[in-house]
Structures are given as C-alpha cells and as structure tokens.
Image (cartoon, rainbow, N blue to C red):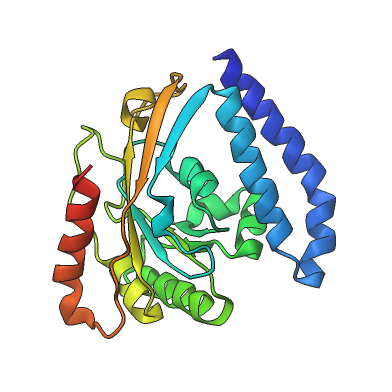
Length: 230
C-alpha cells in the first residue's frame, strides 16, 4: 500500500511539472518527447511496485513498422505495462470518460490516443476511423485489447471485432501478445498490486494486407490461437 501511495504522489508531481511543458509543446505540435516521458514514468512505476518483467519475442517486432498490437487482458496493470515494453511509442484507444481527467486527458488526446464513446452505436466506428487515419498518415501503432474488458477468471474471453477492422482499414499487420502473471498480481477488483513476475510474449505478425472484412473470422482465430499458445 505504501508503494502505491508513493506512486500516486509521483504521478501528481509529474503532471504538475508537465503542465507548462504541454502548453509549450501543444501549439508547436511536438508529441514524441511526451510519450518518452510516459515510458520513463512506466519504468519508474515498475521499480516502485517491484514488478519483474520478462519479455520474449521482440525479434518479431520491426520498430520502424506500424502494427496493431493485440493482447489478452487480465489486469489494470496490462495497459501501462505494454505501453512500457512495446518497442515503439504506441497509442491506445480508451473509453471517453478517461479524457475528462484534467491535464491528463487533453495530453493523451494531443499525443494521439483516441477516445471511444461506448454508449453510442457509431462511437466505435468513429474511433476506428480516426485511429486508422493516424496509422496511415503518421505511421502510428495502436494497442488493442480485443476482449474489451479485463477477465474476471484469468481465462481468455471472446474477442470483439473492432481491432480487426482497424488493422484492415490501415492494412497493418497484427502482433498478438500474451501477458502472463498480471492476473495473480492484480486481478479485477484488487486496489493494490502484489509484487512478482510478469511475462510478456510477442508472437509473429499476422498479416492483413489484401484481406477484407470477410476474412475477419479467420484473422480473429489466428490471433486468438497465438495468444492462447503460451
């Protein structure tokens, strides 16, 4: 608990210090340094929470290529963890309410994170279209949790198709990722994480070039099998 409180204080101080920097960078369109600071903050978080991370399969990721990364979702730790270990400055599609957080929300929007309004039927499509545009125009990569929500049992849940529409729209390969250990350290409903080992496995890319929406069931099954294989 003490480590978590220290971490919260660290983030509050970091946000205060970054506010004037954001105000300078915003009109100049400077985004990448803010993402590097985010990765550094995740590294600090890892050490404060005493999390050991083992990463396998990084040879499957070309740092210069845009991907849709798809991972299983076991814990609140998963998003920050993957933001840190993915060898790119990856963006994320997040629920709209998170973007209402003062300073943090506008900052995430500025660097390329995309909000999704789950209450509106057209919200998902709008978010996918915006993310696909960024991937094609700016070369961004995106992180998606195809299950849509954290698992309550630790088992893989059914996949939603939104991330596959994104990969097809951008004609970008999908990198399946298996996360192991975060469910035991911080399952859904737990406030403070335990310390321990987390394993992240990057699988070979699943290509989408030339595929259409009719191929989504096959692509979904290929990604699901890769994630479940480890």
